Length: 68
Image (tube, rainbow, N blue to C red; front, side, top):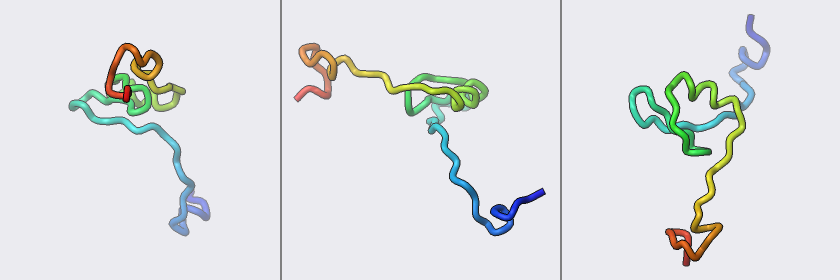
């Protein structure tokens, strides 16, 4: 059964995570950088994750690309 929005071609926005295909069955979460199988990536898409912090930002004396 379709609702009025679907029949008119109008759909709600869908919010989700973006993954990069590293290999045939390997995906990398572009939020946290972790690697997952296709099945695990589908499960990971429904949980909260956070970007990793580079040490050069927190500890500038260690060097790194973010240090000016």
